[in-house]
Image (cartoon, rainbow, N blue to C red; front, side):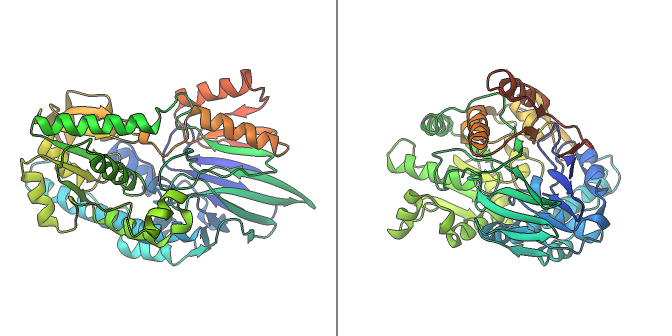
Length: 468
């Protein structure tokens, strides 16, 4: 058995891992690479995958860096099944179509700028269309947690709750090697304990190889209670100076968590009654999907629903769907909290809000999630004096605040705890770190080897193949 690391190897985007056995080839995740616009386009357009060899895809969760290249895979000839949890399938039905819509809309916008001579660039094509997204959605097969199923000859999969986002799964991959079953455990993106809304990550027994994410392998998150306090402070001081709080947030999970936090801060009187706008049609759709899957919720969130109190609604919250209303919100100078996608500021309506508000020192850009290298979000985290939005350089006068404690990713302590628990429950021989940048991975690898006694910890580069 061999694993080839195609994407999310020493980076946090474009998750793709090929598992080759004597009988089949299975692809774990098929995500879009996110980074510099031109580089991202070229890397995504030419998928580095042997499409005709792949028997099945197993999808850990619906985030676009894990699922977003599925329409390309299908468009290039893949006609096998795509296995995912029920919630992940429902989320992808919305998110992949939205990704296609955004790509087509952004291409039209940029091409208009090019035609008017406002942007010096070659014409832009979308990576894929809505029809491509629908073709991918047709390939999905929904499987519940804890029910083992055969994805290909000699390959069985069982999903366990990863606690990262709605429907996210830790994948236990059991492979028949001449009558001996070997188990690989792939965390996908691993969640945190005691976060609101979702259940905690589950533990999986019997792993011989642990394929784990490492996004925050070099740091610890602040307690969620401190994040609530910091969020209240940001909203309060921005409101006092008459500005907007612009929050680029992933439509899946992060937006719902921020809404949940603001709801409780308002109820406690810890923030002013500033209007809150969710300017993301996708977020509205995803919030509806959340309500369809209470089986993924923790007991507190279920109790709220039983009592008729939605975790995702409160007085003063408005979901914006209409484009003209979104434009009016960008043009308005009234104080507000605006939550909009995309989370890394690479596409979508948040770019229009940033273009309108980035040069006003009254405003705050609040970063609440990981920002990959070469994205606009990373440049904002770095607090660069000038940033490029829609191809135009602009002065960054708005305050930038980073609250990584809202992250749905496990931190260093969580990752080590999960690895140790896996070792206690099975013959764990090897740990492979993916979905992380080199610095974070190096720190985590050294910690696992030197302090926790793991003899075999590897950090693959793109194209690396290991034999199990």
